[in-house]
Length: 109
Image (cartoon, rainbow, N blue to C red; front, side):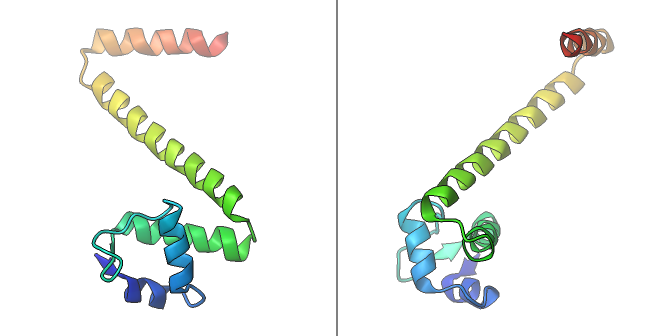
């Protein structure tokens, strides 16, 4: 867990106002109450991305929200694809081969 003070130290230009705005917009989801927020690893990584999008690229809040939503969708899809790949890997060889053949046919269309 990372505290708000730790998070601010990790990012030179980051302020409490930035973090509060991102929390209010639902872009960060810290644990605890506002006086003692803690951030999971995913929120620390998300903060790095938010700083890049706003400070380095100069994106406005609306655009940042769209980008973060798309990143979340990609992350969810990757997780779902990983589950599908694991389920396929657990199948008998004949089933895996049938799936591979069907995928090959679909990709030629």
